[in-house]
Amino acid sequence: MRTRRLRLTSLALSAASLLALSLAGCSNGSGSGGDANVSLRMTVWSNDPSQTALFNSIAADYRKTHPDVASIAFDYIPIDNYTTALTTQIAGSNPPDMAWVLERDAPDFVSSGALTDLTPTLQKAAGYQYDDLTPAATKLWKQGGDLYAYPFSTSPFGMFYNKDLLTKAGVAQTPDQLLAAHQWTWQNAEKMAAQVAAHTDKQGLVVRDWDYKTWVQLAGVWRGWGADAWSADGKTCGFDSPQMQQAMAFLHDAIFQDKALPGPGETADFFAGESGLTITQISRATLLATHPFDWGIVPLPSGPAGASQVIGQAGIGVMTKGSHKQQAADFLAYFSDAANSTKLARYFPPARTSQLTTATLAKANPMFTPQQLQDVVIDGIKTGSVLPSHKNSAKIANLVQNALDPMWKSGADVDAVLSGVCKAIAPALSE
Image 1 (cartoon, rainbow, N blue to C red):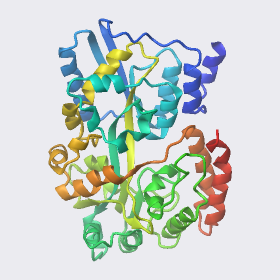
Image 2: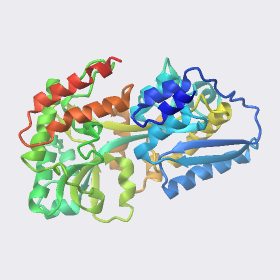
Image 3: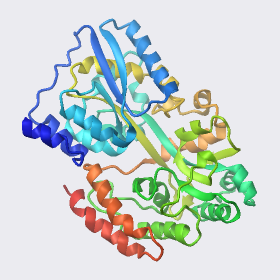
Image 4: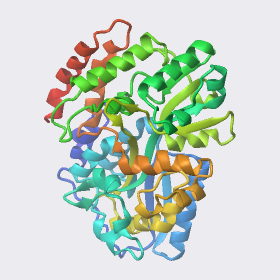
């Protein structure tokens, strides 16, 4: 065990490695539902005061009818180090009872045995309406037909735009007008961004959270060309496909020729009024609560392959190493039932078909118009696909990032770089 503990201190280990180490040969807690004076803990990556207050309110209501549960804590871990910290807890002597899981880590967590099968508990929970969960939302979190994490946040990406900056730049038609005219394309979006950059002192289009590092955020662009990082079965690299070559050539030209996006080393925050457009998840709208400028939001533009929407997800799972698995699963059933999903929808778009209506979502999201909710949220969840995920996600992400680095300079050989990405990740895809 001494050797194992020393290995766990290495932050270079992937989630898959840590999970494998933590579960191999280790006995799990009994998870008996008959325990008393139980303290439950859920790890989260949000410390937003209003969200925490809502979580605590739901927990307090639950405890009123469950005297065996003495406390329920929501343990904040910063997102930048979340998965490493979580897997280290699981591998050590301090596993949480429940945990948020990023979509990119879903394959590792679901396949490793780290999560408890939630299906029996959710199906039996009074009034839960298990069949109301949308298949598109639960797909990533299932194995063999069983659900191992509840997709509490299914958040489509959209394109926010600053109407004030577009007007200042002399843009004739706003994105919502182009959408209504069936002309909301990547070419028109890029031209608009370039116009903002050329005629104001602000940037054009920002792909939020990309920063020339987190390449997965570019899925919102390349899927408009029908491209993806790898095949559906995860075995074949897609970076050297003709579709990806075309998409990345478009992006490269937009950056280095048209100056439509900030270049390497340049930063701009749309929500601080520093760019005309940004691609990000709709949950970011909370940053516009004070209405710093006139804004709108539309779905991602259409590309040669048509409109292709992208979804970011997060699941909540019950840890198999937790000491109170059944109590944790019972609380998760309550936390995610229809009534509480409605409350959580203010921050986390729901995975329930019955709640994907403009009337229901408008109550929780007054910042959006009914048309925006329909176009971006409802249609995005129903038709969109989740960000790329794979086993050994941390390892593959680093390999892709390093192989893509030569792309981000003027005059780069786009096709050669993309070919190099596939050479770099091919062995990892087959592991």
